[in-house]
Structures are given as C-alpha cells and as structure tokens.
Image 1 (cartoon, protein in one colour):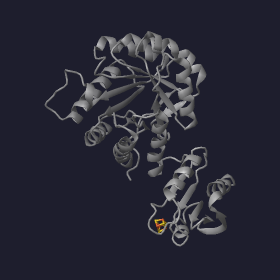
Image 2 (cartoon, helix red, strand yellow):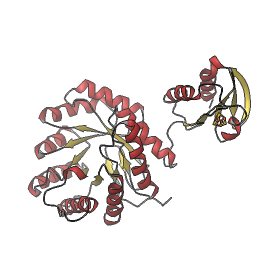
Image 3 (cartoon, protein in one colour):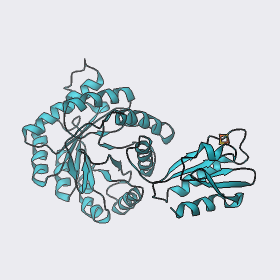
Length: 348
Ligand code: SF4
C-alpha cells in the first residue's frame, strides 16, 4: 500500500480534510432541503452512523433560507451543493454553510466565480471544485480522454481561484466509469496539493454501487490518494456511510465499530448461517467498539478459522460454541445464539 499523498489541509467547520487528518466520511441528504424537519432527521441519522460531513442540495432561494434552521438542528458541518445559479452560493454563504460545492460545468463564467470566491474568502469557507464527467463545460478539449478533460477543467478552475488568492480548495473528479475516475484522480494527485474528495458518481443501487465504489475508491486509497470519500448510492444515505466505513476498514485506514467475520457456509453447516450473520450484522450496527466478531458455520473449523476474532460463535446442530480469541468459552443453545454473542460483546 502506498503512503498517503501529502495534501494541504482545509477546515470545513470543525472537520479537517487533508494533511494528516483521518480520511473523512461524508454523504448527501436525499430529502427536500426546504423540508427542514425531514432534512434534520436524516442528518441526525447519518451522524449516528458516523457521517462527518453532510452535503445538501440547494436548488433555490428557499433552500438557502432553510440552512440556518438545519444547522441549528445538527452537529456536523453542512456543505451547500450549488448548480447553475451563482447567487445561490452567495445566499448559502450568507446563511452559514460551512462549505460550498461548485460544478465548473454549470457555473463557468469567471466573473460569477470571482464573486463567489470573494464572498467565501471573507468567511473563510472552503469550496469544492466538483468536476463531473457527465457535465463538462463546452469549452473543454473534446479530443483528449474524459479523464484528461476532467483534470483540465479542474486545473483551470484551480488557477482561477488561486489568481483570486483563494486556497481553501478541495477537488473531486467523478465519473461512473471506474477506470476513468481512477485515471483522473491519479493525474490530478500529481498536479495539485489540494485535498481530494473521491467517489464514483451515480454508482447505482447498493448491490452494484457498493462494488463499483469499493473498487474505485479502494484502488485510489490503496495508492495513497483521497482525503474524504462519499459512496453515491441509489439508497438511503445511511447505506452510503456504512459502505464508506467498510471500504476504509478493509484497508485498515479507519477503525469504526466492529468488523464482522462470517464464513460463507458450506455443506458442513447445520444452521442457517446466512440468516444468523445478517441478524448479528444488524445488531452490530448499534455497537461502536472496534472489535472483530465472527459467525462461523461449524464447530470443527469455525474457531480455528476465526482465531483472530475477539469474540465469535461456531455453530453446530441446535447449539454453538461461544469463543474468545479462538478459545472456547461455553456452549449456548440455538435460541440464545445472538443474545449470548451480544452479551459477550457488551463485556468488551
Ligand atoms: Fe464450512 Fe465450517 Fe468453513 Fe463455515 S466454517 S465454511 S461451515 S467449514
């Protein structure tokens, strides 16, 4: 695994992105931002799952007016996602947004960008240059690859912001195509010191989107690229946060709650391991300890195969062995499998 790329840290509210800060997990609400109560409720739920930054869509002036009330109801920094109308960025800044996301593909006039940048600078509010493969400006050189086009657009925007003496910058270059995304980030990582927000855009429903995101984001993180991640899924945003942490935990980049080890089951299993593992997974969502929990399908191989687990259960017919660090604790009856395991986890 490559060492992490050195990036220039920025501060979004009380969260540091880049530098030596842990890789930040973020998500985006799917409520109507103008519906203050629903938006707060969704963000509170995301906070419970460990989301550190949240972005909200700002489609009109009414949405900017909701920002102060939303901010009062939540504990994590809020980023306003602005498209097309630069005045909404100014209103969002005025309303107290902790960060802005601008898409150079749909706010491209230097004069409008300068106006936003001057206002952001006054308030020390960072801006994400959020380039998206699907909405590149018409002026881009269409003869180069999509990855190169995205990089060019980002670099042009960075130049513009730097000319205005603004460096509270974060960059993203997202595409649906995973190799394109990886290529774009690899290139920009060498050309700019700013922190990178990485993700695969429009990745899809959880079944496919989590895999696309894990392959794309995971490849980049393994190469040391990426300071904050968002998994974009066609699902409740809590799924995005859960997936983001799983990616980070898979690469040992963050500790966050338990790691579940479960065997794939085979002809030796005498209980429904799939159902049991799903039940345990659900219970573990309420646990915030960084422990390793195993659910194994047989007593013969289970404890040995999961000896790295802090605590685990190896199931036989109608009963199971509860074990700790590969050593047997006691035998429990099938009806008590989950309760006994959770009780043991409580003791950690
Ligand atoms: Fe099969 Fe047992 Fe291994 Fe599970 S732990 S895959 S049931 S051998």
